[in-house]
Image (tube, rainbow, N blue to C red; front, side):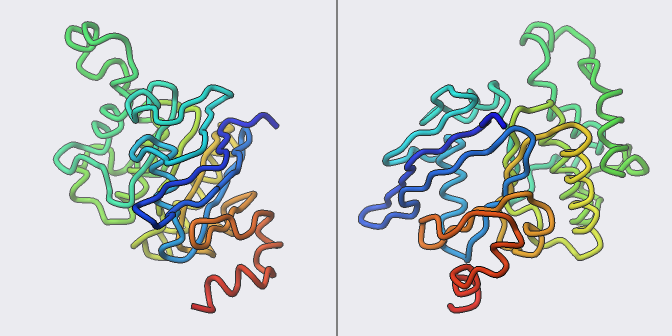
Length: 247
């Protein structure tokens, strides 16, 4: 499979501390890659270096073979890279539908066409399809701020996929979500990957969520790659067990 994302020998130092220490991996076309690790393992710092939120100290990032190291988040977004954050990025005073329209609107046409074109930029139908796919259609006209936290997480994920991105990076999507909504989120992400061939990466502290969602998993510990492989292999890996349970 073609590599959509390639990360080579990435390092990020804060003073004398290496939060990310020589991490290399690739994300293949159409796969769901999970990145897990205990607190302080460097997961979020790694994401932020890939996405231009932090400049890496060393190493290289490529998207479809193009070097994107230190590229600004807005420029990465134009290349088709989307993300979610640990803290929700929804607009609570807008409807569910309008949140989705707004998430995709900046990718439609020019600034002039957005100023003088249709208010919804012709995105209402696509937004309604996305709402239905994530099983939020009964809430399409509700204000996003009135949804439960789990429903807001579903909306947040839907917004990340709304513009048809090349690659989506999901940051702690399971955090704070109850078991029922977590199952719904996992089901929708799996379906989106299978039906639309979406390529995405999930960083998560919830080991069980990642193991049941992802086709391949990377384990970080103290800023380094501890292990990589299939979920079943990593469940039985003593080093992985030690990283999670031996601290």
